[in-house]
Image 1: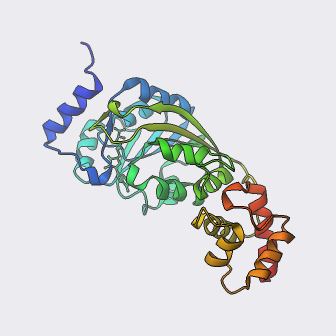
Image 2 (image 1 turned 135 degrees about the horizontal axis):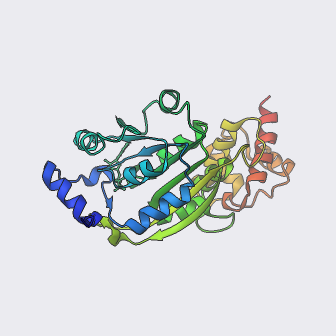
Image 3 (image 1 turned 30 degrees about the horizontal axis):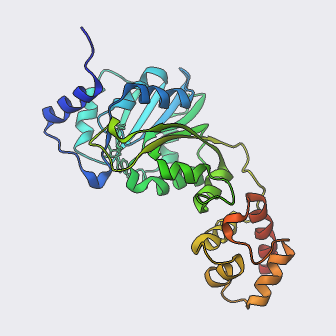
Length: 290
Ligand code: SAM
């Protein structure tokens, strides 16, 4: 018997369960087996891998992950899809369906419960686009023992994650992602491979988690505050941005002195600083606060 194309399988399952997809939950389901293959290849799974999938939908990607890995825990927010997924995967004990919100579910508890016996831990997902950045920031800052995060995201967000200093896409997200991970775009994905078709093009990004952050920073929370303040108004100089958004209790001359002490021209803009410069600035500002 020939297997049904994924687009037909998707339509059949949705019809069978009477499910109308919700735009508000970013429900654009992937229907191209080549793209699914590319995602799986990028994750570099082994038969001893554990995978957290966020937003399994009706399981197109979940199935591929389950074929390659030891265990997949799929976290889905939409309660209508949970019984569908449980039906679909009832004969596959390596698949665990969790009804929850990726922004609030206790990820460390999931790791403790399901991934004690895996050799590597991965996140693989076709992410809901309305909430991509908060999910990725959470995955990175929770310091889970992840090897990599392979995600389908809006093309523009992939551009920001991989952007270098001085380019138009370089942003606070670039700094945060590159601090924790090596970010690489693996594939561009046109909108017509999704049902329904989103209004944007997509890309698959692979974030390989670093053993140690890219730069050494004593006060990590201050580092991120400085980065956010520096990018808050892109057209302003660093001096003005930091003065207006973070160092409000200092006078401008003092902020200028701190920048010079970090060997950074106060007239530069936040988008020109690399991670090492942000780290240096953090050390100087942190020392001043002592
Ligand atoms: N993995 C499926 C695929 O590739 O076809 C579906 C991907 S679809 C882009 C995103 C999925 O994430 C939907 O199933 C949606 O219900 C789910 N979702 C949306 N917000 C979520 C959240 N905060 N936590 C967990 N799942 C979420």
